[in-house]
Length: 256
Length: 303
Image (cartoon, rainbow over all chains, first blue to last red; front, side):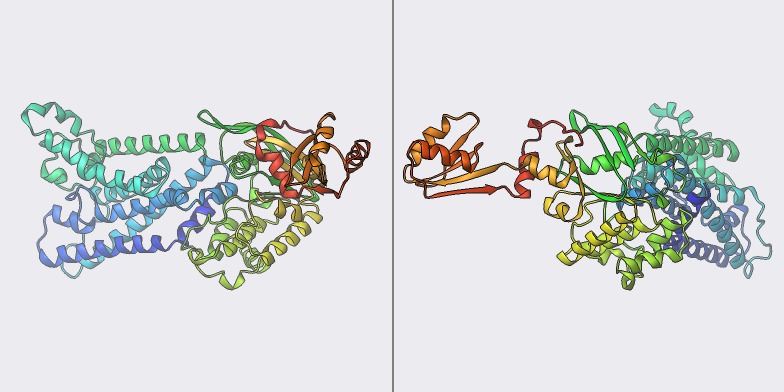
């Protein structure tokens, strides 16, 4: 396992896209924090959360988090896009071990990057706000967890779909279009039976992790009956686990 | 020593590799020869556990996926361009070294050895096929392995490069390593290999020495020139296993009988001969004969 982890770490480190994606995530988050903090000098809880977590639960796709998911997609998808799966597997032939190493390295990277990002965001609010935002707030912890789950999900989809474009489409289209569509349709009276489904939409549920005052799904979280933070996290985590399991099973079974 | 037994792979109804068994011995270069689409790459992928299929390949008695640091035992390159286009040659090898407990200093050694040290810090997307092949060889040699498996390593090399590759592979084999190299060009293989494994349409056609392959699949023909060609043709056709084809106005091409027999037949029939010449088919012709319609031929045991 140590060899596989070292391999993955060097793989990640020697890609220029890793720097660009992580750099962009950090800069974008700091820019949002700076903007929010400079415009609002007596922030509500929701605004504080948005500044610290790069926009919080307002967008269907959390911005910095999606960039970390792309790092994850590249971890597995690049192998197929460039055919490097052959040298990779002749170096680490145990496929479950290789996949685990990818998940661990990407997950750990997402964890560290998000933690650093939160610290940077808090730091830029200091000149503007009297109270320093709490780092142990459930929203902040949820945000770090969300980033790790998205990044790991990226690895899983890149592996499952064996390429970059398909995985990116699934990662972006599902939360932005499919889940939004189901969510909106559930408001049509004839389709109100969709309501119980909405709380199990994985990406929508995942966003509850960074919801400070129920602003997920455009402030309708409680109205549509979404689970609260941690049960919602469970829904998203189960989804991620299922995709991971499918990815590793097919990886072991299929031709490389 | 590589021992492959009953390798098989099918894609739907199409059989790509059909019950191939062979062994590759150390101390010599074994060529893996077959026309394009004969199943050479698929066979190599099966050997390395990249593809799922039937059969088993043992490297000194062990399956590939049970090796802890396979790069140190088997250097395999199936695709010269299997590199990330923006990861430098050096970083590509460092990555593989990191996954195999190989010191990073070894990377510069192998890059030097294959002659691309000066482009080590460049991105492979600008590499020519020849440079990519050299990087591939560097990758194969990274772990100083006892076994090399290379798919079409000469493809894209210039004549100088092919000679260099031959010398390298022969030297590595002479050190007692097992070297298994595929090609679809017999001329290339006849320069490099001591032993051949020849496949066509996924099936074994021949395994053994290069010379044996040539003699087995080469048919000698005799060119006869005579003013009474048609009379001679009739006389020759009366013999068993002889085929006669006209080759121009007063010439015949005869297969299945040697020059002595033909001369005697001509003498007995009072036919005047102007030319009697034996022509031996080239290596390429032997290859074409062997693989042209692979289904006509069955596996020939090692002899």
